[in-house]
Image 1: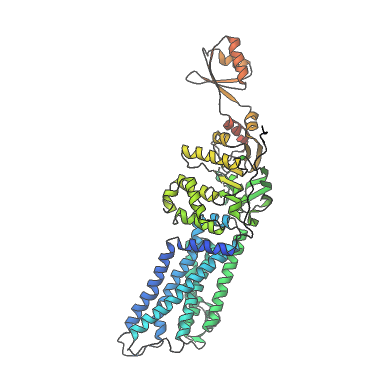
Image 2 (image 1 turned 30 degrees about the horizontal axis):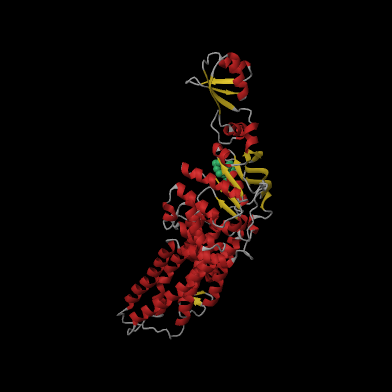
Length: 274
Length: 300
Ligand SMILES: Nc1ncnc2c1ncn2[C@@H]1O[C@H](COP(=O)(O)OP(=O)(O)OP(=O)(O)O)[C@@H](O)[C@H]1O
Ligand SMILES: [Mg+2]
């Protein structure tokens, strides 16, 4: 007879080599992005805003006896509204995790906060860039079809049009990342959406009440004005009299905003309790 | 194996966990006991790297949670409050966690089966009952087949069948050599499930010992006693150094004497004993130990 051992069984298991990192985080965040209802709703709102508003405002030009200056901007007018839908999507991608406690599950699966934020930013930025590009081209083709044969007709080969279409998608993606970054810092859905709206709308209003010297110095840094240079076929350094950056410089500034917000959010996440 | 050393957590003026040191060994179930607000959840959160200790440290097999290579394959945690987006299905929730740690999709179905949620796996979690939500949390804890299992109030919301299932599960996990650490309010349940106890009050360690010792240490071990004629019995108990409370139905609750002394006393009085039952005394031991440190107790 063999002696029965009382020694406790030890639990031994091989772990895979390496460690959980960005690749795993990307697939997990991709699943999370598409498995909540707020995603299709926000994208639906974005489509309605861009294509719907674009169709309405373009149609209004139809039959006008004059040539509308820069019809591309008129066709893409819905992007000014659409940026709020993409901002909300970016905000919700992380604020909903804080609101529901899901973030605790997420951080127990991936305790390295920067990896979580990076994965969310790549998924959010990637999806909104693709959606933004598709929408800018689809909206434009729809609009130019409506305007065909009128005095305001416009074609994709016209000077500056291609640039506007490509950059509009980029603008939308960056606004989505700014929403994500704000919510990483603020954690709260309502507060983040309000701040996002404030950044786009209220800052512009506030600034308009300032002396001209301040307006001239500051307004070129506002997201709304950067957007205005992106959507315009040509802005030779000035927008309604105030100096602005070229749209490319503007987009780089916008990208820096997003980066600063996301990095700030990461640092706070590392320091804060969850 | 979990090691806490001088673990301290302050929230403003509140010291939620105060210089706490304890070990949780593999191969047995360690119960984590303490009154409301004593710091159990805060301690669990610090083990999982969700709350940062103000000072001190806690490690899992000598690693901080944030340094684990495959966190869910090493530690499975059930957190107190639901930590799940209500808009997702149970399956999507588990699948996203699995993806974070390269865990196979088949394992998602396995754990859903283990906790009995297969039939509702495509339902939105927001529609789940308290007990179903708890089961989903347990499924998430088991997802990575981890060596360390941390469960904060796992029987919360479970029905009697669920509680028994939980007990069996914890024991079998420990039997496989895993480290099992569970917090609970239910002392009687703990007596049946745990081998070892860590007891805290107001964030401080009160006791760390085997369950059996914990019960034995209680000086208020009491017995329910029914005798043929009880008139003179309480006085005799008093004289023998014990205390007897006579209930309306004529039974007595006697403490301060052991079973043998009560039996001998009855014999010396020539009274027949109909019942002599030891009362579950883990609760008593617990109350006695933590009596001075109850934060939100009823006024007495
Ligand atoms: N985020 C927080 N901010 C401020 N105080 C907190 C926070 N979390 C916990 N506390 C306080 O810390 C103390 C310990 O709370 P904790 O939730 O850890 O207790 P517990 O033992 O889990 O209680 P219960 O048995 O009720 O679950 C309590 O006084 C609580 O009010
Ligand atoms: Mg608790």
